[in-house]
Structure formats: structure tokens, C-alpha cells
Length: 454
Image 1 (cartoon, helix red, strand yellow):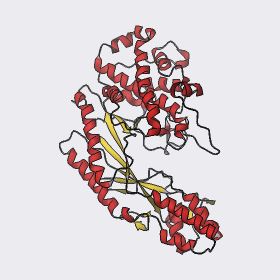
Image 2: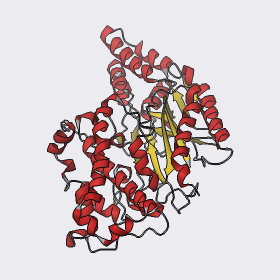
Image 3: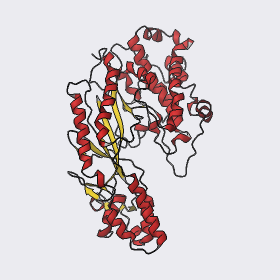
Image 4: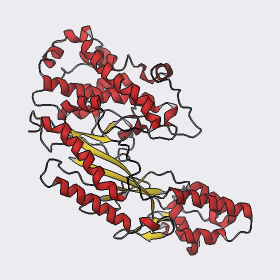
């Protein structure tokens, strides 16, 4: 199954006066500005619109809205005084952008090509209703209670309240900075179910891998490192003697499937170290892995081939360091050194990113790397960036899956591990290119999965 996410830099917001729990007593003639600056959805899992072809959700953006708010407040102090309040506290500036999400389709279905093309055409047609003018004015989004675009006319009217050239220049500059970010270009990501035994090939060939220049240098080192660490597991003299490992190496499909799990785990411990480097000062930690697992990495066992013999249950890892799983984890993480500053410098030639005041740093892997690998190989749920709120606010992260993709079926009983291809190199996709980009991904996934199809 393959589904797509197409982010587009068009602001989307709610009417501030109609938001639940919000108190707004500002002037009605500038309500559109308040809505634009403060009406973004708190949660990015909110469904704004859903039809047969796509769902629209709000997504995180980097619009410089605070800059505009401060410039307008300098012109008219009452503007700041009437900041909307929730639970008695002033609301923060929050501007979201739009994201189109297509329902996943079985890429092997006879009608799949037509469906993917219809999805792309539907998104293109929907954006055409407001996209060309979204940087100049606001549109009501049909069939929703939301609005898109920028209230330029209202903002300019407020700016005209001052004769101070410096204030005018500051406000106009802030407005222009937001307008320049509004684009009819998609940042495209795809999520596809990949059979575990095919994952090593995915890493070996780096299919659909077009990293940004900032990441390319690091990942030119990281991809071979993943292969090296996984191979070290099978070259380790103690591990090779284990009866379980000897049985595993006698079945190629099972062996490749297990290697697929190790490839993913290795990419996460390497990616987590990368995410702490200076490369990620302005990037999400999720971009530090080429293939972001949408299923919990402790549930990969559900996708493994029929008859795959799991590693025997064991006492807590710290009570049995001689068990096979801790041995594998020690090799895969180089004894948990992957987060150390010296590891970053020695392996990648990168410095650790300094923590800015009040910064909430994202961690791709929440636990110590050794524990992370051990728990995943013991089929225990693990904590990563996608579900970091386990035990605190489990509703905050809504994207994690607990079961693999059963469609299309694998001939050895394998199921698809849902992987998000993040680094497609498709950050500037024009609406007319969307269908072609969809099909490029579909063709690649078909090529990957076909040898293991039932």
C-alpha cells in the first residue's frame, strides 16, 4: 500500500472568534489578522477536510508570524492588548500550513495507476481554487470552517495608522517575508509497505534517496556504516556460535528479513547521533533517517515471514548480558557510543549542536541506544520521536501504527513495514508534476516488492 503526503506552503487558520475555549475581544475590523496569526490548529492531527481522494490536515510551518505581530503591535499598542486568550492566558502566534494526505492504495491493484493519477489531479484542482492568490488575500476553504491565505488588505490598513517610516518599513518587511513563503509547490513524502526481506536491498541501492546537500555528505558515510554494522553482527565470532543464529542463516528469506530489521535499527541509532549535530539546527530530527518507520520498531516481528523463530524470551537484559540479543545490540551500537560527542566527530567530522535557550530538542531515539535495540529485538514497544509521549500524553502523537501492512500479501507470509520516504528530493513539486512524481514512487516500490509477492 502506498499513500502520499503533499505539504504546500499556504497558511490555513480558523476564525478566532469561533474557536472553542478562546476569548476574543478585539476589534472586528482586524479580526482577520488575529485569526491569521493566532487561529492555527494546536494539533497537527486535526482533520480539516476529508473526501475520497485526499484529507487535509494542518502542518508545522516556519512562517515568521511573531515578527509581523510585533511590528503591528508597535504601530498600534491596542493590537497587542487584545491578543486572544485561552484558559486566561494570551495565545501564542501559531500559523499552520496545509498538508494533503492521500488514502493508501494497493500498488499492485489493476486500477492503481488510475487512482493515483486521480488523487494527484484532485489535489491539483483543489489548490487551483485559491493557490494563485493566497499570498494576496484570504479565501474560505469550501466545506470547512477554515480559511487560507494572507489578509493583506487588512494588514496594510493597520500599517497605514502610522506615519513613522521605520515602523512602516518593519511591518511591510514582516508581511513580505510571509508572502514570499507562500508557494504553489509541494514538498512530497510517500509511505509504502516494504517487505522486511527487501529492506536490505532498499538500503543497499538507496532507492528514492535524494538528500539535501546538507545531509548528502553525512549520509554518504552513514549508508556504508549501516551495512558495516549489520555485517559485523554476522561476522562476530560469539554470535555466530549461537544455535539460533545458525538456524537463521540457513534460511535466506528469514535471514534477509532479520537483516532488514537490523538495517532499520542501525539507521535510527546513526540518525539519532546525526540529529544532535550542527546539521540539524533548523531541521526535524525525523530527517536524520532515510526511511522513517511509521510502525513501532518493536513490532517489526509482526511483519516477518511465517515460521520465523523469534529469539527466546530472556530475563531483563541487564540480568543476562550473555544473551544473544544484548550481544547483537552491543555490536550494532558499538557499545552505545553512538550519542557521544567523540563518535560524531570521529565518524562524521561534525560538532554537536549547541542547545539554544528554551529550546526543546527533538530526539529521534528516546532511550539509550543499547536499550533501544535490545527492546526492539525482544519485540517490545520502543520510544522514538513519533511516539515520544508514551506514558505522558499518548494522544499527542497520532501517526504511529501498531500493525504492518497486509496488502499486498507476501508469498512467505511477510507483511509490509510502513516506511515513510522522507528524502525524496521533491521539495519543489509543481502541481502539474504531482502525478508523475506519484508514479515514480509507485514504480520503485513495485520493483522492490514484486520478487516477494504472493
